[in-house]
Image (cartoon, rainbow, N blue to C red; front, side, top):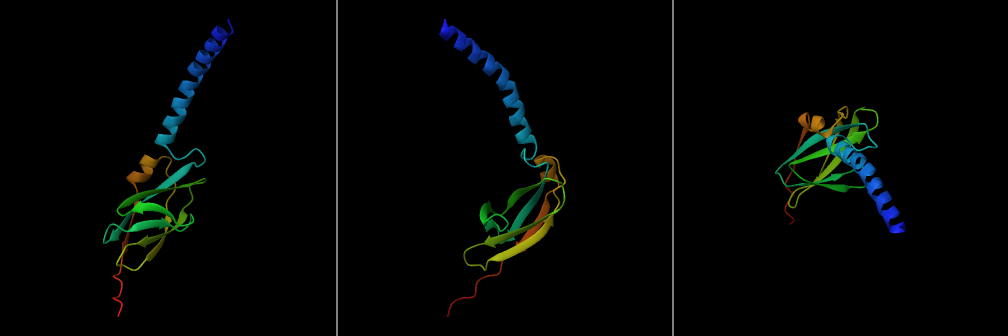
Length: 128
């Protein structure tokens, strides 16, 4: 009898929670993170391509390699000052800073209007 009661409660709980969980996950994939209300995107290129991009605003976290679309979030939709460092073997490290529009309410909208940022990397001088 106890097993029947527990089984019934578990079924009802699962039935009630699954739609809420599905709705929450759909919201995450369609928009910005739940803690942020707005986001913006930058399409980062380097010449030559293939440079590693580090977020200098986030303890130099690696974001990936160019070409790369990166999203940043904000609470109020105000422009965000972003600083990134690009590294590639055989080239000098480069830093690029720019203001990013973070007024989009979803990642899709931000990506459609991603700000293009291109960084020219200079070859390292040969060691003599």
